[in-house]
Image (tube, rainbow, N blue to C red; front, top):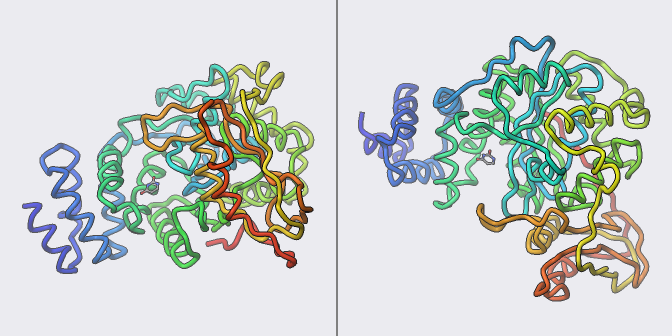
Length: 428
Ligand code: URA
């Protein structure tokens, strides 16, 4: 086979065969197909799309490009979840221990943040001593003994995706639904869980900016998972405003801890309880929302969180004693008028937190674990003129906080009309 013929076939809008896709991924992973040919193919996919069969073939060829994890020695139905990313997205930190507190093993590999989106691994690493790297044997041992583990993805898992994703990132070929679906699902399938909950975010702070694209991505991934025997469901969730009341690594850990203690906003508690109900359902464990919320108020979910942090070397005593550290500087930004908040742009908020030091503009940027934003008013809340809208925390002496926060302030709308947004928009 020749890569040039495969590119041409795709360019002309024809479907590739299983053999062609498998050959292409094998050859790209081994280095026989160079980046420039692979990027030409990705761009052809942008214009021509892929059939359902091609997307499934691509996903399985990617799975086969690296190591696969065998979790069958762990008793019970192992569940995993994945979010397509967002701003203030601390769901895994609360949901994983909550689900594990019902005896359902959670085996999760997470990622890092880039740009305006945060990453669970970065948040966990803000806990002193927390280790995200584990061998397969250690991962299996921890899930068996503690009931959950959240670790980084090993370099050997889905090798083709590592190469292809880095290439897509610099060739304007990230936002292509079959490529996103196969990238995400190949990693989930290789990671070995029996069932997967997908959180497909939609809105300014998400990859998917409109509900139609979110639906198509969710449907494609659910079909891919179910086709290979992994029970998969997707929720489409709102990311037009940040999730919860904090953005930033340590700030989000502190907010998650509060929810795990039955404190924090009731909206966030309820939203995560709904996700937990779906995830438990995937393992055939039927629980009411009240029963699930009880595990947030009675310490059961918190105990699982502590077990995970301790098993992964994190200093739980230090975290409980001082969940947030003071930054050198902070600034409260106030409302210029009275009314109801009708928008609080997630993208602008995420970018502001990133510039303050909480995120990375490029992969090599170092994080300030204490930097970030606390949000006091969200969509639907009443606000008086001069009341605080948000507070920004930073350590950079040259950070021009007034100038930097103006874009977010401009994108917070206040009007006379009270609107309410639901967190879960659809279940697929
Ligand atoms: N996240 C992934 O893992 N892959 C994509 O292609 C997009 C988002």
